[in-house]
Every structure is written in structure tokens, then in C-alpha cells.
Amino acid sequence: MPTVSKKAILAELQRLYPDARPELNFSNPYETLVATILSAQCTDKQVNKVTPAVFARFPDAVSMAAASVDELYPMVKSCGFKTKANNIIEACKLIALRHGGEVPSTMEELTALPGVGRKTANVVMANAFGVPAIAVDTHVFRVSNRLGLADADDVLKTELQLQKAIPKSDWSAAHHWLIYHGRRVCKAQRPLCESCTLRDMCKAERQRKKTAKTEAKATGAEA
Image 1 (cartoon, rainbow, N blue to C red):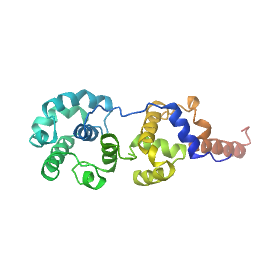
Image 2: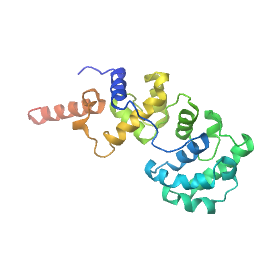
Image 3: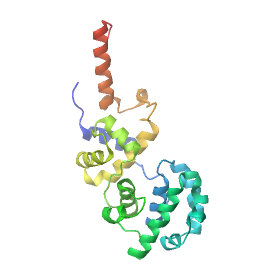
Image 4: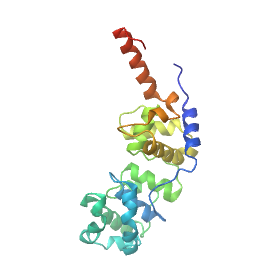
């Protein structure tokens, strides 16, 4: 079976999700950072439920820096561990101290903040500052490796391979295409392969068919 071009896969993803955008609600870099930290291992829908009250009470990094964990954690408890509340406050303290209360826009500066890894930094860079970036969350990791846009066993290698496979001008958009496809079709446990328009281009599907054919031959069954 011939190898499918990555360009064709990307073109179909763009066709499927032309209006793909962040599903977290935020309106500035500070809100982007806080919402993204809260979204780790939590649904965007749940984060969106709690952030309006958080942003009303703590409207910027300076006010958040003055908050206590005991104040913030009850407001975000439904989004996960207490560590998130602590990281948000500590990150805002550094933002107030080092950056005049303004969220920084570079990978180096962002990942120096507590609770901010490459994924969070890429989300903030792309969505708050318009910097081309590919944030590799569980959906992007799973879908890109299943489709064959990447062939990696960790998120950093996946990010670097996607940077080579995707034109830089499309990095941020492709991040959303992959997330949309992962949430709607290429799900973790039960992917909807039968209805997927990328099925004939999918590396995982080609491998599945090859394995099935080999097994059929081994048992003498019809392929």
C-alpha cells in the first residue's frame, strides 16, 4: 500500500475543521495561562465553569500573586489537585516580580514559571501572542502518531517531528485540528474509524490491515 503524504493528511484535517479554535475561554495572556494550567488532566468544559468566578475575583497576575492557596483552591477544586492552585499563585508571583505583572511570551521565560511545561507554554505563545507553536497534549500525541504525522514515543519528539512535518504558518492551527479530531473521531479508547474520512490515509489503519492479512494467511483464513 503506497505511503500517504503528510500534506494530504493535513489538507483533510483543515477541510474537516476550518474553524477550529481553543475551547477554553480566555481573553488575555493571564487568563490563557491560568486556564491552561487548570486544564491539565481536566476537561475544557469544567475549566470554563470555574474560571469566570476566578477571573472576577483575581483579574490579573498581580492580584493573583497576592492570593492564598486557601482562597483559590476551593474555587478550582473541581479541576484537580491543590498543586494547580499553588502553581498558579507562585507563577503569578514570579510574573509580578520579574515581568512587571505581564505574562511573558517566550518558551524560556514561560517554562521558568511553576507549573508551566512546554505544552502550556506553547498554548500561551500560540493563543495569547500569535507565536507559531504546536502544543502536544494527549490528543495531539495520540492522533498525530496514529495518522503518521509523527512516529515518536514521547511528547517532545512528537512536537519536534510535527514542526518538520507541518508548515510553520500552520503550526497553531494544526494543533487545533488534531485536538478536534481526537475529541470527535480519533478517541483514545474507541476511535470512530468506520466514519473517519482519514481512514485510508491512516498509518494505524494500514498497520491494522497488514496485521489482519498476515494473521489470516497464517491461519489459512480468507483475508
